[in-house]
Image (cartoon, rainbow, N blue to C red):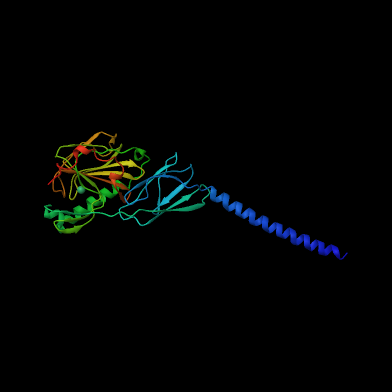
Length: 298
Ligand SMILES: [Zn+2]
């Protein structure tokens, strides 16, 4: 009679131990399995300021980047853009269909930008007359609105090509001094070419803005490539497409000019992923050699 209770308590203790360790095991397995459901997206591209990162995820997942819900196609494709001054670390939040989420961190390469002095610019565009401020603000808003659009187009996944060839006279990110005055950095890539040179679409898209003469950018076109990625072409002398028009890669869309704040005829091609300004030069092959140097503007 005395042995039994002891035996019972031993087996109780034993089973409690087993139950406890089973519990731990189940917990571990559960947390492992719920983690495994949130897969790391397949990513392509270099985490670097000014770059685009292309991603793919199984259906039903959501991606948040820079507090923005990233558009993901039905097939799971998405794109992210890293601005000029993007910090050293990027975080990507991935959420599965059950609302569980996981954060992935990536180190971001920090770039050194050039300093560029631009002289001989019309004084009115360097220090605008206060009377022009309303116009400048209205135009900036128009451009922002055009770039805010989220369309499901998949042109962002195309291989981009140069919209024209010629000597590169300005690069992404450089800090600019206009007539000696420090101003906002340059976000586009400048390609010098005579006024009237044809500008072709670097990828397909839809025209979201066509303005003949903006204060700073002169003749301006914005083309949406889908998922928040857009191209802007500025200082144009002639626009050959209209808002709402669908264009294919290689279509002639405009002619080079020197309108707005420009010292001479060139194309300034800029790219945005929403409000993040990205570097178009990272998307295209090197500029064909024969057009380099010698012909440089100025
Ligand atoms: Zn430029």
